[in-house]
Length: 231
Figure 1 (cartoon, rainbow, N blue to C red):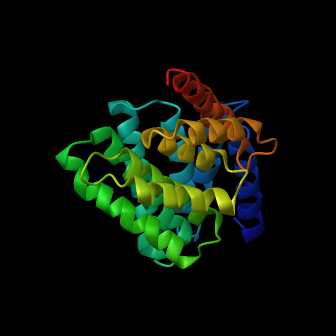
Figure 2 (figure 1 turned 90 degrees about the vertical axis):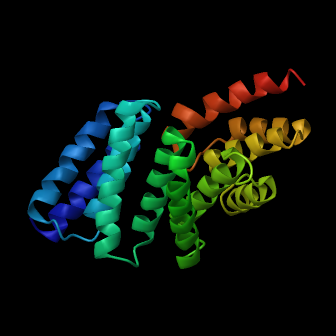
Figure 3 (figure 1 turned 180 degrees about the horizontal axis):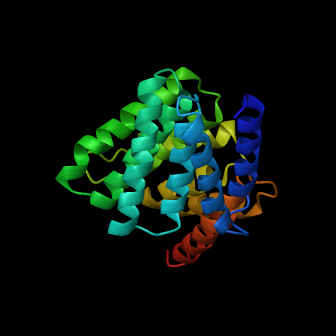
């Protein structure tokens, strides 16, 4: 398989992934395409982190249970293979961090502590490599969620707000960042700002990732607004 053929598959797979809010079967099709590349070009720089990304998204559609946990672990394994082969890969660092964060969220409790620490380390490295990279901005949002959602004494709402605000400033159209900042305001009992940010999230006309907005961020923002009405 030539480099041009691999690039063509990557472009086609990205098109499929960017339409999963319309057709979720695109996830399976993208993974099938990536598997074809893996079979003939296992040393390709991007193949393992791309498989991590698509497998993670597959797990997201399954909810948060033991079945999805196994898929998240598979995604993490792909990301770690990528990281071992290419330690300078921003994408690999991000997906190791992101997958670890989600696995820790499902496992929770004391067993999750080392996994959370690994997630924080990898996400911070993603930002350190290049703070303007799209995955670095996303890494900031995931870190904000970690500092916001973990129980005391790991919880730090000031750090959470810092990471979320930075992500919103860098990419105002990133609905994930807007939703996360709104949730942090809620936990700070700053209901006015929480409402304003949730409304701003819903008003974004051209989201950076339309599939995430449609599938997760906009519905969650609407639920958050309903919750704010209680206060």
